[in-house]
Every structure is written in C-alpha cells, then in structure tokens.
Length: 263
Image (cartoon, rainbow, N blue to C red; front, side):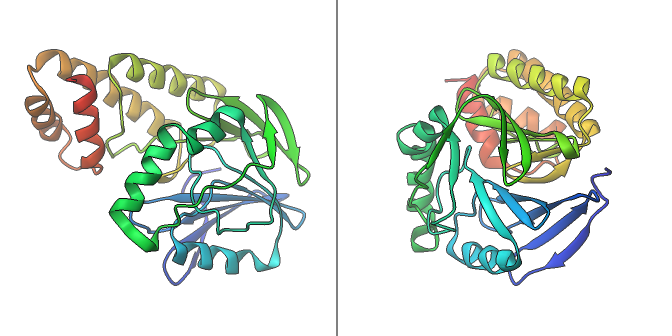
C-alpha cells in the first residue's frame, strides 16, 4: 500500500484519510489540533479498533460522530492517555508500563504541561485501562495485533495490512532525542522496520509514512550525533541543526533534544 493511496473525508476541524485494503480499512484521523495528533481506526467487518485517542474536546466530538456507523470493539492506549471523555464505555487496552506512563510517569508530566498550555479546550482526564495486556499477539474485534513493549509504553503491529504503529517518526520534522544512546535505539528500531518491510509506519504526530521515510530519519539521527560532537553547547548545536535542516518543523522538539545532548 502506497502511503499516498487514500481517499480524504474533510471534517469540520480535522480530516480522515482512508486506506482501503479490501477486507480491511485504515482510517487515519488528522486532528489538526495544537500538537498535531493522529488517531488511527482499523476497520474489519463493520467493527473497529482505535489506536490512541484525541485529547481536545472538539476533536473528541468530531471523531465520536464519525464513528457512528462502526461498532468500536476497543481502544489501544499507548502513549496518549489523555482524553477520557472520548468513548468512555469502550474497553481500553494497554500494557502495565503504558498505564503507569500516563498515570504517574512522563505521560502524566506531558498531560500537566498541555493542561497548563491549553486550558479548558484540552481534556486532561486519563483513560482508565480495563484490559491490561502483555507483549505478543492479541485479537480485538476479530482483528489481530502484535504488541511490542517499549521503554515508555508499547508499539503495535497490524499484520493483515503490513503496518506498524509507533509514537514518533516524522521524516521532515525534529524529534525528541534524549542523547546519543536514545538516537541509537531509534535507529535500531527503524532498521528493524526496514528489514521487516512494512508498507506503512503509523505515528502519533504525523501522517502515515513508509520505509523511505524511515531511512531519511535514520540519516538525520546519525547526523544529529555528529553535529552534537562538533558543538560546544546547546545554542550552537541548535543553530547548526537549523542550518542543515531549514525546512524541518518541530522547533520545540529540537529545543528538548538540545537540552538532552547538553544537559
């Protein structure tokens, strides 16, 4: 499946890009919210499973209306635990570490940050996990998923459409990179995707991407490490990265990366 082979449904705020695999469909919801969230709906035989949740109230309303004709069998809550006003009665699936990430860990800190930044338009309430899952195969609503636990939460493979979901990629935007070791870990993960030959890579803050995009990100991360070695401080690091990647978005992520490399 080519990443650009989809039909678009324009919504009041966001848009839905629908990939048709025949027996299954993937609905990629571009929220157009203040943190560029993406939510994914995997549909098969009239049933749907969601990956992640919108966290702004207007997106929650919009996506709830879009789902009126589908029976939602469950929701996988990995890295984005906020937005509990969305489909409160649907079963919520997460690994134990993902639940802890949203309730007490780094995810909680992000929720608090976004609450302070955006106020009442942001739903700070955290989804209560009804089904704690472990790494390996799981079937929800007749759809098979493979769960891979990560340091903070979990990634999701969708074998029937040869796709994988992870938190962040973004081939032309900066990412949060917590030092050289973290860069190496991301590189190893992306090389694994290339070896497995996934058709689509789904992420929380970008439209679906492909293996060419994964290689672009690997090259960026390798170069990021080289730039860090050649710079004396965070400011010179940021300046050099901006010089070499003038078209990249995500300045706030670059600021955080510089803080990690030059703590």
